[in-house]
Amino acid sequence: MQGVKAALRSAAALATGKAITLFARFVTAPRALWQGIEPSYAQRIYFANHSSNGDFVLIWTVLPAALRNRTRPVAALDYWLKSPLRSFIGREVFNAVLIDRRPEARTEDPVTQMAQALDEGSSLILFPEGGRNSGDSPLLPFKSGLYHLARQRPNVDLVPVWISNLNHVMPKGKVIPVPLICTLTFGAPLQLDANETKEAFLARSSAALLALAPQEAA
Amino acid sequence: MTGAPHIVLLLGGVAAILILATLIGQILRARLDPGGTNPVIENLNARIAAWWGMVALLAIAFLAGRTGVILLFALLSFAALREFLSLTVKQAADHWSLAASFFVILPVQYWLIWTDWYGFYSIFIPVYAFLLLPVVSALHGSTRNFLVRIAETQWALMICVFCISHVPALLTLQIPGFEGRNVMLIAWLIFVVQLSDVLQYVWGKLLGRRKVAPNLSPSKTWEGLIGGTLSATLIGASLWWMTPFSLTAAAGMCLVITLMGFFGGLVMSAIKRDKGVKDWGHLIAGHGGFIDRLDSVIFAAPIFFHLTRYWYSAV
Image 1: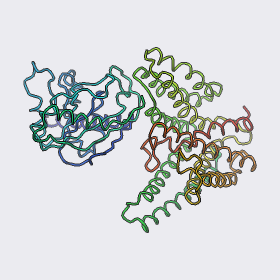
Image 2: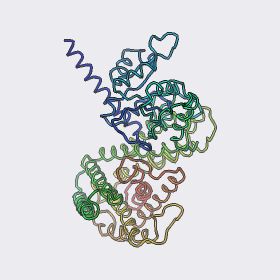
Image 3: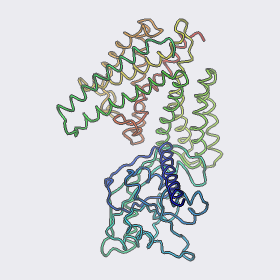
Image 4: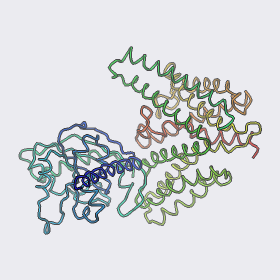
């Protein structure tokens, strides 16, 4: 009985995942530009700009299926455990690494959780801005998580991914998406240098990500 | 579609052309590029493959009748509008007017065509959307780039919804002696305009020297323009017996729609240049986006519709 239930759940997770990628394709026809790197089985940490809850769905959608299955988004526990449906999607569909953003309440260290997921062989999708950016500046200052993770697992490539247009598809607080084409630009990988300071590394990785943004008319 | 035996003939002819093109493409690849690394030959073959898909889609829509044709062009409008609005200037304040463009204006326009309400579908976007959509943006506050934002959105709707919807609108014309065969108007229009595009490209590659608009497009030459429009006019006019037009009228129509098609390519290229992109999209392999393939039809369709309606339609 347990086995049947588990099988049903994982089938439902698979179908939900398929439906979500299909919906994402219909709405935004996402296009991946592998500018600085090719898609491959190598373990990676993808780090991207964060303007909408659809961000990691798009990265997840444009990754080739074989890579998608071993790539886990890092997401906020307080958001994804709010309702049973969200929890099902977050945990079983996306297999997210759920981290607690509240330092005073958490029992597990987020960087340790991420490092553990890497040790299990997964790649990660990370939003180093820490929260959604709904302001006018293209990119918020990075939180230090990316640096600490890079220090703990210095051999994993960090791949910047710029997601364009998604802030227009679904601005914060809106329910109906506007179907616009989103482009995801995958840049050249970078790694933490041996004696690079935290500030220097965060500035360098942030600049590498920003350099992938297209020049916008507005 | 009843009573349109000519449609089978025309589609058969197109299939024959595509079979020939496919053979040539495969021979070129086998002879010159066995490794599949020559970008020109690869692009040619990708284009031919995409043409098969486009012709198959059109044929299915024709088979499905009026609803099928209207549905197909509504979806094409959707894809084109998505490409166009991805490039325009916009802000969060425009969210509702953009959403309304996709989910209200586009379906209403095609519904009006489906119900054959000429008096409304021919002014719905130029008058009602034109006046009311900016109100939605204005009510949301931001005035930065306001005129640019509302003007670009209106342009997107005119090009991608209004103009494209005039292709299925051809089905609503009532031409005495041509009843039940209106789908031929669509097939003939698309055939002549697209053939002209291809022939302009071929003539331009063979003889092209003098550029029509050097700072706009290196591939548009006077030799290509004249050779392409004239040969397409010749072929289109030779099919006059499939249309409600006389031989001379068919030739005149061909000249008008091939020239409009050329202008469409020119104007849409200027917009691409302005926005700094090479193609409108990426969904049609070898061709770019939907607007890249449709630009000539977009400019030709409303003029063809109105000329035919003025001179041949009973209502």
